[in-house]
Length: 120
Length: 219
Image (cartoon, rainbow over all chains, first blue to last red; front, side, top):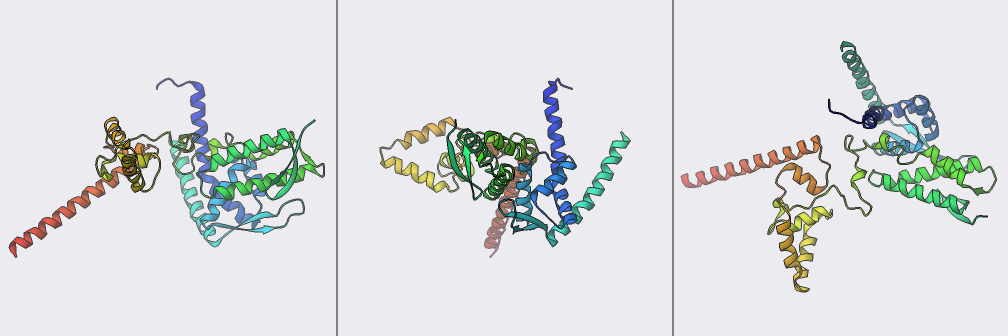
């Protein structure tokens, strides 16, 4: 294997791990919204932080916007006592369907990955 | 002693320290640059601004003036573009960092100037220039060159120089570099497929033509 400076190797690994997380974020957001009924981005962030999937809030907003544009989520405004009105997000029927498909593939994926890791 | 500014964040008025304002302004500009090419950039920015306004209101608790440390707290919560760079870089191109190809003045530095033989009137210089600057319709570039002929004729030597200095985009990776798409396996595969489609199309039409001609002879 060619020589790579340790820092570069770490960066590459970090990137790989980030990619892995990113792949499942959308599924997790949908799933959180299914459990919660409706949620404010900060609530979603809290859950994702607990799961060690996301660190900063800035990452979430683009994802929510994208999921909303695909019709998997929608939102409504709610007055807040402490500040500006808040966007509360909800999962749509289409979102539910997508989530089912995603979860199914995820389970297959995990099984396959675990198997291939074990066999090594 | 600090100067105080009045600003509007996400539709809410705040008084803010001069230094704090500068920090916040820088931050929002860097975010905007980061999301420039994501879909729904305006909406994302609006959401983030609203959230920042909320953080300010929560933590000000009637104290009145947004300080530098409060801005720093808000930035910590939202994250700087560098902080979510890795989390976010896979947005649309399967892992390639797209935004790194955009230089400060918006021209993609990943691009190279080629001549485009597929869209050529003379040598494809104008088409290549159009690709380079991201102009959708080559017509405008051609028009500019044509107008230049009447306005002193400087575009004729310019055309010849560009003709001599650039080469034709002959391979799929050349064409990607010409159009500024990141050169990765998927994109090259897509270009090759397009190319094959075109060849098949050409072949089909050639065959049809031949059959038609045969029919004509027979008839």
